[in-house]
Image (tube, rainbow, N blue to C red; front, side):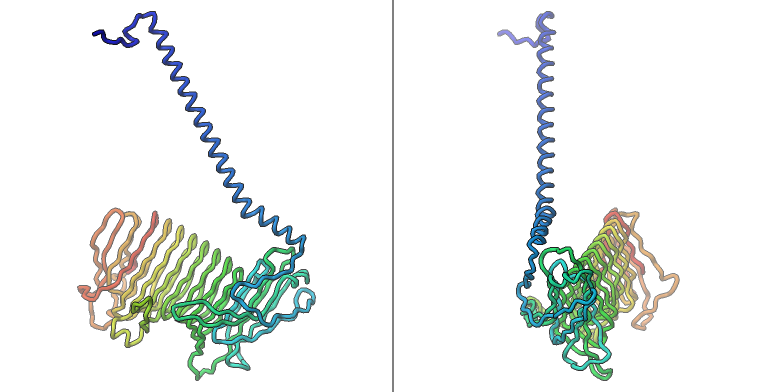
Length: 453
């Protein structure tokens, strides 16, 4: 049997020819790969261009064309939001850009304030009146400013009624005032200012209870005055690109949502509180009072829940945790606190807390610092999730000996359990930590975490 020879074993005269054929094959393969790579690049470019064109078409070109068509048609039709019934509407008398304000009187049981359409822009202020004729009605004053009186042809300010929003407590009708406009943007612009005056309350009288107060007013800044004489079952604020400020508001449940604007103020809550924004800071003082137990989704739930959420903005929160005596005798109060942001700091501290309470705190950020100053009443573990060089426990016990809130002269003890590359945990307790409960958890991706004891 004759073995095959490789081209290296053939005659010397044939070897250069074979090497040339092999080199030509390599060049041909390289050219094909280059052509394939060019085709792939062109396909990617065409694909990205098509996506960019479709995005621009949907978000810019079509709306702009639709607006120009509406301007040519000069469509004055003002659609009513679904689920809303209109009542009496304001009759404006144009007078140099500042007509006489429109006045409405709405029931205090469940007031509703809404805006709809691109021309509905402005501010709403809720405050307590010094003198009130009807103790069961709130006075609503709506002012408008504009440059061209034609602006009034594209907006309506009316009494509104709604069946309400379903919740775990049921659904109840709402009534109030709405500002609605055409769904397109005329060249005329204006701005509204809404003042809601709640009736005054005698000093000797208990807090006046309002079942709910709801605003659904995008592009309206919200300001709440000192409403210490009122207690809201629910306070729901829904806005966009506008700030929310409160001097003092007390409610069982509070939900405030906006974007690209800060949320500030002092709030007292008995159940749940949610503050949600983006691209801005949250700076609040929260008085959380644990006093009740109620059934939620078929289960008995106790404790108060707080969530603060933003992005690209810092969170600064000071908590006062309180509880009733009956609650204290039972379990000392339960508090569940969440705070999250990104590319910004979180700073949380406590002015007051009940003895032997249960605190579950979870604060998370990225590229920022997460810091909590622990109250003397806290007795439980802590966890920090961050890179080893960026974790810190600030021990201030050497400067001022902490006083035992129970008056039993117990010793404040700081434990360190595990210290890893990414996680560190320990506890801050009184004596041997027999009553420790809850947990403080701080997390920062590529940022600092700090527990101040």
